[in-house]
Image (cartoon, rainbow, N blue to C red; front, side):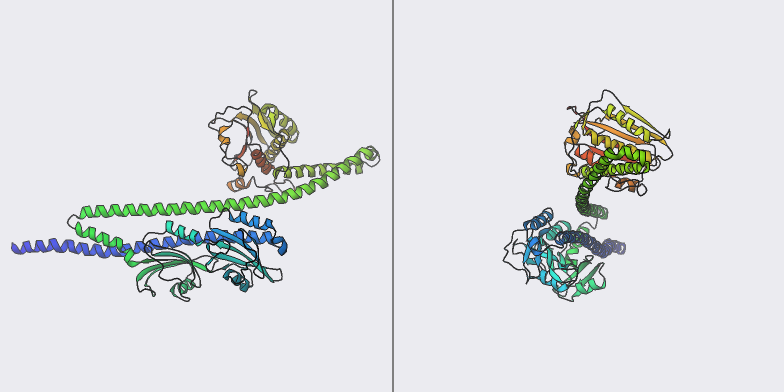
Length: 586
C-alpha cells in the first residue's frame, strides 16, 4: 500500500513535471518560430514601405529632371523653377527639400530658401552623383542640410548632356525621422532595432526599442549583413550570435528593389523568450489545474494574434492609401500635361481652321454661282473643303471646352423641349427604322441649369455613340427625371470638386441616354472617359465625346456616370443642377 502510495505521489509529481517539461520545450521552439515569422513579416512591410517612398522620390527626380531639361543655368536659377520644386515637395512629408546644382556645386534652384553663396561641391550626394558618370540614382550618407538644418539623406542624379557631359546634379533630401516614426508605429515591441541601411553599411534611418540603442553607428563593410544581402537580396531571417556584442539574436533583412539600400531588423533571443518565460511562470503556478492553464494560454494567444492582425491590417490600409495617393498624383499630372498639350494644339488648329473656313466661305460667296454652272466638280470639292474646315473648327472648340478655355453660359433649360430638340436633330442620322429613338420626360419637371449649346452637343455625341454601338439596330431612349433621395449623384466629374457637400445638398435633373447595343466590358468602361480613348475604327472617332461630357458635367456643377455590360447595352447618366432651390437629398 505504501509502495502504491509512493508511486502515486511520485506519479503526481513526475507526470505534471514531465508534461511541464515537454510543454516548456515545445513552447520555447514555438515562441522562437512565431518571433521569426513576425520578423519576416515586419521586414516585408518595411521593405514595401521603403520601396514605395523611394519610388516616389524617383518620380519627383524624374519630374524635376524633365522640367529643367534643356534649360540654361540662368533659366534654372529663375524663381519659377524653385516655385515648381516647392510645389512638388509640399504634399510629401517624407521629402525635406529638392535641389538643382550646376557642375561646380553651386545651387541653382531649390524648394527651400538658401544662401546662394553656399556650395555643395564637397557633399557626398554631389560627389557620388558626379563620380557615377552615368544615368542612375545615388543614395547618399546622412547629413544635416545647410538650408533646412534638418537631418537628411539624399537620392541624387547627375545631370548629363546628350553627349554624356556632366553639367550638375538633382537631389531630393529625404527625412530619416519619417522612416523612424513609421518603424516606431509598425514594428513589434520585441525588436531591438529596425534600420534603413546603405549597402556599404551606412545607417540612413533607424528606430530602437525604448531604453535600447543601436549597438553600432555603422555596419562594417563586408560584414554579415552585407554578405547576406549580396547572396540573397530577396531577404532572410536567421538566428546568430552578434559579432558586435556577443548576444544571441534573430536578424532579418530585405534589399530595396533597384536601390543600393536595405532594411534590417534585430530582435534579441532573450526578448523573444520574454513571453516564453511568462508562460513558464503561468504553467508552473497552475500545473495542478491544466485545463485553466490551457484556457488562459489560449486566451492570451488569441488576443495576441488579434493584436498582430489589427496591426498588419493597419499597415496594409496605410500601404493601400499611399498607393492610391500616388496613383491619383500620377493621373492628375498626366491629365494636366495632356490638357496643356491639347489646349495648345487646339488653339493653333482653331485659328488655322477658322482662317481656312473664312477663305472658303468668301470664295463661295464671290464665285460659288459661277463654279456651280461652269465647274460643278470644283464647286463640289470647295463644299467638301468647307465641310472639313467646319469639322476642324468644331473639334478644336471641343478640345478647348475640354481643357476649360471656353466659359460655359448656364441658363434655365426645360428638359422635355431640350430632348425633343435633340431628337429632331439626330433622327435623320439613325437610319430607316434600324434604330428607334424615344423621349421620356414629364412636362412638369423644373428647368435645369446648363449651357444649352454645349449640352445639346454632349447629348448629340451620346446619341451618335449609342447609334454606333447598335450596328444591327435597336432601341434608344433619352429620358429626364428629378433625382430623388435614393438617386444621389456620384462624386463631381471635376476631380477638384470631388465629394463636395453641395452634390448631396442641391436638387438635380438626371438625363439618361440608354441603348440596347453591344455594351462595354469593365476594362473599356474604366477608360471610357479618358481623352482620345475610342473603340471605333481609325478615322471614325476622336475619343473626345465622353471626355467632353465628363468635363462638361463637372464644370456645370454636376456629375456623369456610365453603366454597361457586354451584350446588355449602355446607359450614360448626367446629373445637372435644377433651378429649384429645395433639395430632397438634404
